[in-house]
Length: 219
Ligand SMILES: C[S@@+](CC[C@H](N)C(=O)[O-])C[C@H]1O[C@@H](n2cnc3c(N)ncnc32)[C@H](O)[C@@H]1O
Image 1 (cartoon, rainbow, N blue to C red):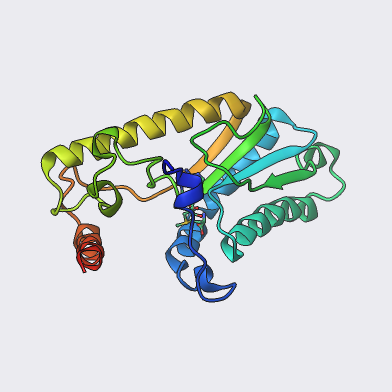
Image 2 (image 1 turned 90 degrees about the horizontal axis):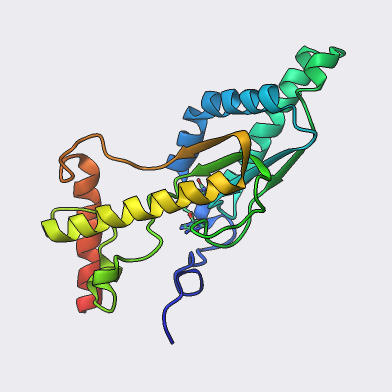
């Protein structure tokens, strides 16, 4: 049977319901750092579009508290402005009911009706490719190279960079269809500061992880 990413490579269950949360402190910190950006985007949508119901979608949400934290964050933003400006009709128009969703399914496909979402949010997800590069399919290499590190040949690096460009362009095209005109997206994901893809300490860390995976498979 051919491999289907959603069916065969979904997240594995961990130890108990809070397993993911215990290992997602970096994501939690990033969400905190992005708080003001999210606030600004929410305000911009409300002010420019005056939506009757504000539709917000969290793409690539986790099953645990990080997703609930994002929802809480948004609700707090609405409550904050409503207590500050209570009774002000113009401001109340800027606090519409909010419909927040996190859906299963890949965001490399269409998931929402056209022009139906006011604000997209995604945290720590877009660094994952939709699939291994076509040229590596059917080889063991496709499953083991989880990150561009010195263990990769320059031609492999190019393949993965090209795959990122394809995936990200597709993601933007799909969201463009689904976003209400004038809507906003807040996307946070891992990137590189250097032109040299082999520079930076993450390379060292993920290089070690890739080596460990390879030796596990060899065993
Ligand atoms: C590191 S977790 C981040 C989860 C959550 N956003 C957070 O910040 O805690 C990455 C998430 O991306 C999801 N993911 C990866 N590729 C995806 C895709 N193509 N479509 C939808 N979700 C995807 C995974 O299932 C996983 O839940």
